[in-house]
Length: 160
Image (tube, rainbow, N blue to C red; front, side, top):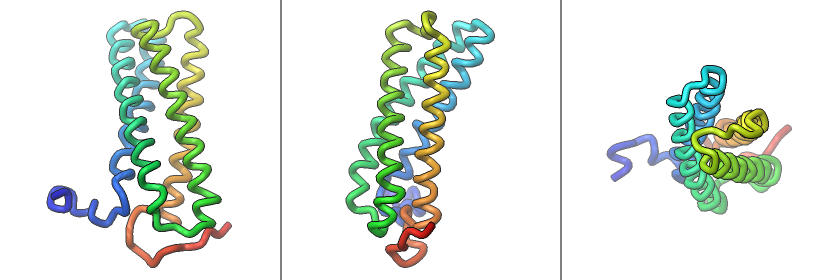
């Protein structure tokens, strides 16, 4: 059925690539909205940012679960698993934990933390850094070692 709706998805080894972009967009969007809410003191932006952060946390959980499910069957060489996949996994688990912590904090002081707000905003910046580093490794696996499809023979050894 999915092949009829999204024919390109039939080339994927798993559905992880279809899911991972949602938490990235929601987290970056939430961070931008929280920043704008902070400098404009807009309560509407604060609530919108909180909803974005909630969606980020939910979609990050799905992305993490799909990644753990997909990892064993990923058609990459052992060297790519050791050099890229393991680091990608660690960064994204850390990002998911930080997303959860920031979400709980924001929910506890809805819609936006007032105490230690600078620390909360620094947490969002750190989160964006973790995601950028983890996504870079994911992109390298997909585009450098064909971890996302069947465009070339598998496996491709890691080369520096």
